[in-house]
Image (cartoon, rainbow, N blue to C red; front, side, top):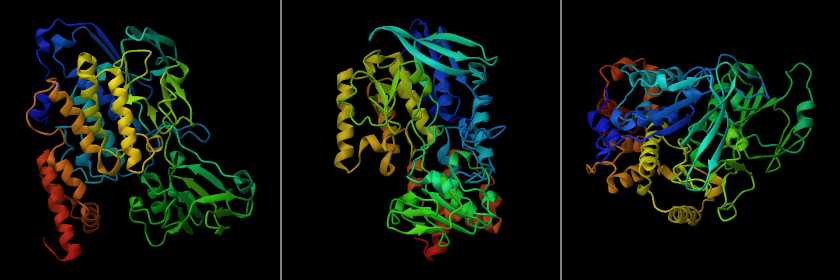
Length: 508
C-alpha cells in the first residue's frame, strides 16, 4: 500500500543510523491529521536513531481523527462542541488529494464522500503504522511553559489524564497540532439582542448561531434563514436548508466574489449586515429584512491556544498587527500566529527556534499532505538545527514574506496562514526542496507534490461530473479497480474529460 520511494524518502537522513542515539522528548498535542503526520514522521526514523526518544501524543478525545471524529453528544451554546461535524457533511474536495503520501483511500470510496470515510481513513492510517501505542487518549493539555534560557531549557507541560488527575510532563520539544476549527469567530452587531428577544407568535424563537453548532437542516423547515458567509460550512447550510426552508438568504461581503463558488438561483444573495433591531435586519446597502427567523454564521474560526495562554507561552491580542511590536514573544491576533518560520517554528527569543512547532496552521490546502511536508521540515530541523538560518535571518525572511503579501494587495495579519491563489503546492515543495538542498533528504530531482496533485487544480468539471455520476447511479463503473494513487489520478482525469465533453460537446 505504501509507495516505496515515498517511504524511503520520508525516513532517509544522512548517516543517522551511524550516530549514537541521543535522548530527546517530544509532546504532540492533538491526534487529527496534523498530529498523526508528526507522529508518523518521528516513528519513521530507524530504531537505532530513536531508541532514546520519548514520544507522546496527547489527545483529549476518545480516538483519532480530529474534527472527523463524531461527538457522542452535541454541547448546547455557549459550551463548545467537540467538533463542528454535522451528519450530512461531505468533503468539498476530491479525496485522492486529501491523502497522506503513498496511502490512498480504499477501492470503492466515493470521490466526494461523507465524513465517515474520512474518519475511517485516519483510523486505518493509525493502525497500519502502529501509532496507537504512542497516543494517550482522554488526556487534555492544560498549560505549557518554557523553563530555561533562550539557548537551553525544557517544557513543563501540565495535563489532565483519563482519570481527571492533574499531572506534569517535561519535554524538549512541543508540537501543537490542535487544528483550526475549534473556536468559532462570532461577530456581533448593534441591536442583535433586541432582535433575538422579539418573538413572533406561532414561530420558534429567533436564533443567531455559528455553524459549529449546526447539525440538521430540518430545524429550519418553513422558516426564513440568513446565512452569513458562503465558504465550506456556510455553503452547506444554505444548500441543505434550501429545499425545506421558506426562504434562504446568503450575506456576502461582495456578491460577485468568484471565490464564493456557484450559488443556486433560489438563494437570495444580499450584502453584509449593518445592524439589527426588534423589527428586523438592516443590510449595508439599506435593505431591510423583516422576515428572517434564524441567522447562521459561517464566519470561520479563530486561532486560539488556551493551554499556551495559561502557560504564558503566547499572547492573545486581537489588535496585534505588527511583528515589530511583538519581538519579545509569540502572539496570536486570532487570525495569524507570529512570528513563525514557514508557518511552523516559533521565533520567540525565549527558547530555541526548534523548541515549539505548529503543524497544520495553513488553510486552503490539502491537510494530510501539507501536514506531512510540515512535519518532515520540523523534525529534520529539530534533529539538526544547522539546517535553519539564524533567527535574525528567519525573521527577515518573514518580514519579506509579509511585505510581498502587502504588495499583492493582502494584509498578512488578516489573511493569516491562508495559502492564497493556489500557492499551497509551491509552499509544500519549498519546505522539502530546502531539506534536499541541505542534504537532509536525498535530492532525487523530483518535487514533493506529484504532478497528479497539481493537475487536480485544473479539473474544473470534476465535481459536477461526480454529481452526474451519482445521479446516473454509475459510481461502481468509475470506482471499480481504483486502488493506487496512479489509478485514482487516472480516474479523475477521465472523469473531468467525460464531464467536459458532456457540457461543451467537445473532446478537446
